[in-house]
Every structure is written in C-alpha cells, then in structure tokens.
Image 1 (cartoon, one colour):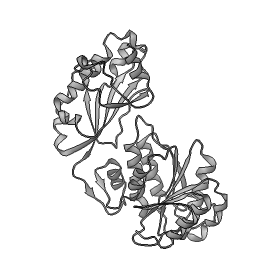
Image 2 (image 1 turned 120 degrees about the vertical axis):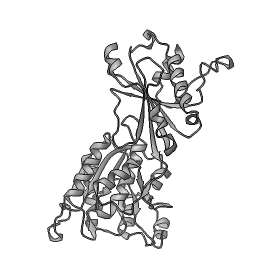
Image 3 (image 1 turned 120 degrees about the horizontal axis):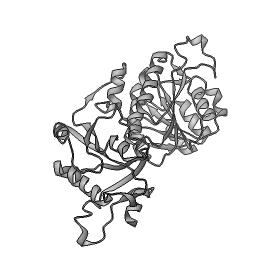
Image 4 (image 1 turned 90 degrees about the vertical axis):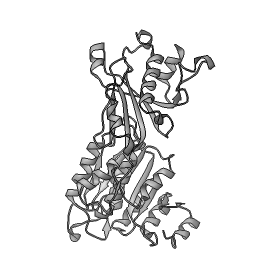
Length: 370
C-alpha cells in the first residue's frame, strides 16, 4: 500500500514501481513516466485536437475505441491524460485496487493500439478532487484523453483572421518561420515567465507560436508562462495622438484558460494592429513589470522591423529582459533591442543563437544576420 500512496502524492514525475521479476504482469508499464496533477474537475480544451476514450468509474473497459481507429492513421499523438477521480480521498478505502485499475486501463489502451507504448508521449495522471460521494464521482469523465497533431498541416504565410489564428494555435496549420518555438525549446529552464508580446499585424504568427508552445506545455492548466501582456501601439490612434508612456493598447490575459487567452488576442486584434513603424514596447514592459506579480523571467517578443517608440523609458525597467527577435530576415538586429538587452542585463535570442548582454556579445550583434 505504501507504493500506492507514493504514486498519488509524489510531486515530481514518477514511474510505476516494480516489486520484482515475478510481478512483471502486475506492473507491466513501470517504465512509463507519469506526471501527477490534481484538479477539481478535468477541463477539455476546445483548441486542442484530442480524442476522448471513455471509461466508467472504477472500470477499465474503453467504451468507444472506434474514436481512435477513425483518427490514428492521420495523426501524431504527443500527450495522453489518464483521468481518475480521487474518491474516496483515502485510497485505503478504495474497493477497487488502485494498481489493478491502473494496469487494466493501460492494458486496454495498448490493446487497441500497441504503438502508443513505443512513440514519444508525455504521460499525465490527472486526479479530480471535487467529488465527495460516489454518485457524483460516477458523473465525472474517466479514461484517456489523447492529444494529437495532424500528420499533414497547411502552411500559412501570415495571420490576418481569427480563423487563421485559431488554426495555428490548434496545430492544424503552421508557419515556415518558427523563431519563437525554436527559442522556447532551447530554454526549458525559463520558468514563471511574464511574456510581453508585440501584437500588431505582422507579429500575429509569432504570438500564435508562443501560445501553441504554452498550450503544449500545459498540464492541467499549469504552465511556465505566468502572465501574457499584448500591445498594439495605441488602439488605432493616429501618430500625433501617441504620447510616450501613454500610447495605450496594452492588455493582460490569463494563462490558465486557452480559450479565454485566444479571445483576448482576437479582441486586441480588433482594437488595433499598429500601423506605425514604431511600437510602444517599453510602455507594455513597464505595465507588466509594475502591476503583475509572481514572475521570474521577463520575455519581450519583438518585431525587428520596428523601432521602439518609447526607448527613453528604458531606465525605468529594473528587471533583465530577454528579447526574442522576430522577422529578422537577413537584417542586423535593431539597435533598440540590443540596447534593451544590454542596459537591463538581459539577453537577445534569434532563430539560431542566444546572446547574453555582455560587451563582446553586443558588439557581435552589430553585424549579426539570420
């Protein structure tokens, strides 16, 4: 029983333990590493392509295996949630042996497709904690949620409509310039991020990449992105109306609900899409750093073609800023972003390289081209 308690309450990733060679059948899937997450009730993400394989409470039979058969030849699975209900709260009171149920459910999944055991998949064990009686627990979802990408995706050169934005975030479309994805994949150590994003016309495809990365790295609504801040340089104001520090068009979005996040992005798109060669990067940075809390890293996703309208506010930024440079296209990195990285003690990140804000690195950046 001590191993059952370990499985439920270990905070880090864990593997199903084995008691010895004679128990190989009982603990057949001991080499699969599960990440344990507790939620009040499992939430399905509308913008995540997924297949729900349903099981009854305390049962290991998959009710609808045909749902996977219909899709499996056309998709690439990348994450699987195995959803339980933590009732009774004390697992010593369970009438169904936990290991037998887990093992039975895994056997049922691999019986309909053994290849799922062999491909790289992130495995999550999600425990729903809300139910306080058996009847309520039976009403909750139980089973597997297989999240996937289509094998064939369409390429988009730009994002101009809400439909194209949703296609990128859903993973059914992609762009050939994957700068933001490349940078984020290089830096898994970044945690509790405040992401400040240029959300003007040419930058939509890059912002969508960040939200896609955020979605793929969420487990039960938890991600390393703590806050999103979007700026559109003034909500369609004319140039003469844009005062340094008071240009406006800066919006904050919650990170734990993808649908709500996307709705905010579309709202900011409608409010304004830039229009000038300069953007209010520092107003947005200061809005985020001064009014939001509980972040460790400050990330600025910037358009290399645009100057910083309010660079004179740089002295007010007190945290190191990591600048991800987008749309460089063979050009030198814009000096405003080099200055932001250098003076805040931050860093610059391009499609291929990372530069710390040191004199030698900054000197290299004066001629750096992608």
